[in-house]
Image 1: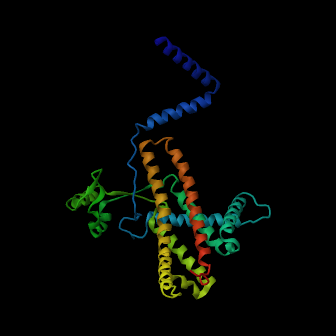
Image 2: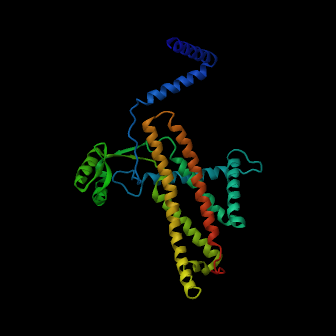
Length: 338
């Protein structure tokens, strides 16, 4: 048995030595990666910062100036600069950035035609803008420094907010002395005192798609445009689907009930739009932060690649649903009979 094991290890070591001699550079890369992976298990990594709500970046400053708002401005500026550079010197034979943007726009327009048909030209500007903004917003959370570059504010910066929303701490999870605990009403003073003493870290940048305010604003703006396109196509008859009293007897009751469902569906679309994008992107950031905290080297890479794919898919879903709702809003329901 011992001789068999010795022969196995001898053959294995001979193969390793032969591989190193044949591929010294590749062997060095593999050895370095394994070494860094082992070291990452013993590295002291700070606890990841996870905040459900956006945070003001200026201590004692305006509460509306949050890290997600700053990143939203940067995303807008990036898209404006890209649009300017891509169209600054247009040529019949595109190259570089112009070629990339033309390929992207042509692909998106093809998708829009597949959903909206000839009306794609009417909706395309809005739908493509949504796609590009959501895509860059989703990917911005994957950039180095997002969530890790920030400022340390004293606990007094949130003292007013703690007093104002103190009741919200009841039966909620809170970080007290580095431990996650369920805060009862009697423990509220302890949690508040610990927060004021320790202070808190505020990242300077946060992905706009991980902010519920941004996704809600996108959802509301999209549904407002749905109503605008519906009114432009059908005039005042567009509102007939929200209060349909046609028919007699039992059919009249059914039509009224269906029209109420139509109105509720408009509200449900806002909720679905808002939480679908926010939930996927925020959950992805939490997963990335958790994996980087557990194993800092190499292991988070597949999750980064997955989040790149999720960012594209969510942007496409938002755009395609917007196109579907635009098309549905322009269909007349006046000729339907039940």
